[in-house]
Length: 483
Image 1 (cartoon, one colour):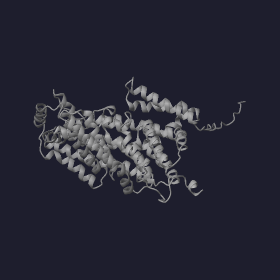
Image 2 (cartoon, rainbow, N blue to C red; image 1 turned 45 degrees about the vertical axis):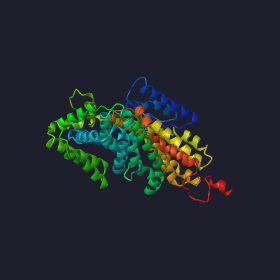
Image 3 (cartoon, helix red, strand yellow; image 1 turned 30 degrees about the vertical axis):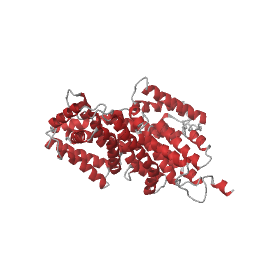
Image 4 (cartoon, rainbow, N blue to C red; image 1 turned 60 degrees about the vertical axis):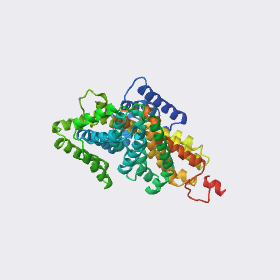
């Protein structure tokens, strides 16, 4: 007789453990060491490191009772947020390539090299990128258009590319932060339940003074260093070469108008950028004489010219969708890691430890700044910081008599502006890939990005313009006030 077998019952789900503060710090230290070793001595790509970080976290998560299948689910849930920025990234790559082929960027280069003086270049770059970003609502779109052009002008005028890139970053992120069309501005206002215009007005209290200070610094640096390496002969040679390669007139400028009009009509960023690329592609083929088959290659691989002039190659050989794919991979790796850390609860002990140290509304704002910086440093994208802090902190702010705009401004001051200063972040990856200048090189010169939170600290410690729910009360806990 065959032996009867009992039906198998599925194994019970493993009991999940809550991580302690020490365990949370250990995981954070392991991640930081892994990334630092990979970026530093091993010179590995940050996209690869962030993706492999899932494996670094896996043993710690397993100890807490999580399977790798569960970690995958957590990662995929968060990584879905990478799709919208990925579309923007690839659209920017396509647009840069077509704007080069159409002569759009070369026309701006010729105009800038012909008119702008080295001493005013940094100030003009800062103000121009701020204006374009304010209108477009995207720092990345600004960096990929006006930023690329102004870096070319600055290089042609003999300025240090790192300083020019710093001015580009400062202006682009000021405009992005203050634009009602910016995704980060809308996200922070929505998550914290702050009216959009209230959020923007409140941010101007810190961003406005920082803008004036940054403008003064760029003016001073330009006046001191602007003419040190200026070579009029080289500039004339670059202009002559560009005029020999492209038709330089008003026609190549039309794609810029297309993008600005579309954004002014509040059309989607991706649609605006792709139509800007399409119009540039038509000009490249019908006006500049670029073969249609070559245009397709440029859109995928980036525009390219064969020139003995190294400066000319650095100005024109860039763009393309393929060059942006590594950045898309960085997004997926970073957001996936963020989803794992969030769902497993590995960040929560540090968050709780910091919030327990809150003594007043002022210390709460300072601790929020610290937590935001830690979040964008570990996770490499500000979206995770916005989602985590913006969701958990509004009730805490209310307990300390603080209106939600205090939280929304802090998130932008440290998250939006701080992310691009972290060398392994997605923001820095885009800026470096587009401008060809590393974060370590441009960060010291991105004045707007670190002066803004310093101004916020001054406002907080001097008790200037801190929005209170009840103006008659201080910034202590409600219970303490009533007691």
